[in-house]
Length: 429
Image (cartoon, rainbow, N blue to C red):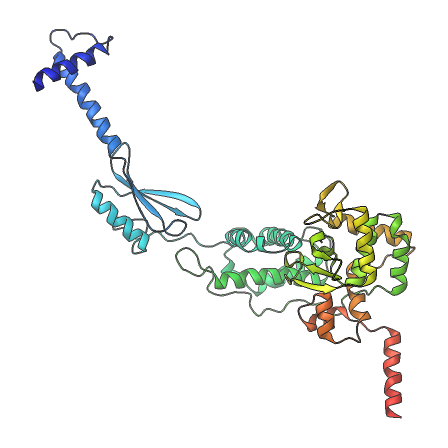
């Protein structure tokens, strides 16, 4: 009976293959042709059934998978390294052995070459590769302005040292050569000579990257750098840095012409004067950050240069300016206090605020002075409150340490100096 079913099934197959011709004498038998067709179908079905796979390890960490190759049947092992999917042949068809090798690979006992050969050495770290890793993992955690500086500075260092330079070979000669070239303006985005403060800022970034590499490890647990080759080298510093403090008369002159530019400029000017905060934090304020009833402003960490989130009370002049902004730009929640002119959902851009400042100086009749910008209002705030305890001043202005205030922001005017001498004379009798 089994033979009859076989003949019937063979007959059905032939009926489905009308183009098959009956073999001629001397050719292989007709039954052999039918048998070869059935053998091929059984082989294909067995191949499809054998497309099994086995996974070991944890997703996103040490996940590996073994599976048979569709053509050869040899087992393959698959894993991810630096975001790329890699595959190697195990060169055998033993399922139990393949699963054991997957477990060993996931556990870290063996490397990608599972057939007795030594594990391939990783490619040497280059300066370009180090900057790529730092740019992907660290730079995105910084503020907008600092992210842009990171990208610009990394591109400058790669042009100067070369993308394929081994960072461990950087030396005192490279350090000194960069300082000379950067000062002279032969390197850098502007192409103009720069002050020592700018050179110092660039070198601080390079040192930060190398220090980070000294503490960070790759996927095999090896340190990216054994040591920072530039640690301890002296950075150039400005002997007489230009730190302009805006005077009260200059502020009044700017305030008088503010309405001739834009209502946003006036609000930003008043807030910078009354709160002492950076213009970058002011321009990114949202209405949910303003508490009119409590008379306070929340300064978010993501908009602060030092990542310091804090709330401060504000003066009546600041609340009046904010109330005027609310009348001109009604909004709630995440709506910006100072929206961009062409996009009410976006915050006012830094470039436009700096352009308005330059125009306001001209309208106010103020002679251009290097260093007199928005930050001069922050120095004015610190100098105006010089009589207050440093702890109070730091909390009001958002400074983390008093050292920064004393070194970079406070500056006594002539009146304060004369008063101090007069008080000394009176104390002595």
